[in-house]
Length: 68
Image (tube, rainbow, N blue to C red; front, top):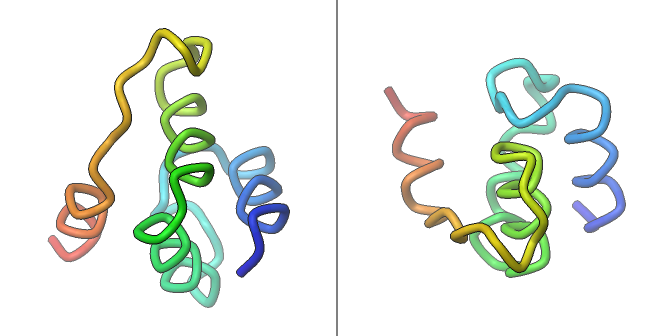
């Protein structure tokens, strides 16, 4: 998955991963684990705060939440 595709998922479905198309979740989580830019996009969607004012979520926390 590209960063642009990830950004489109967030724009269309928001930061609730379970609302994303099932075939896109794992590729998105893989990108989230590997990309600080993806983490920033996700954090921004989740918090609504500007990038410089928000903490970065740990990708492992998101993956763990998805597993439950």
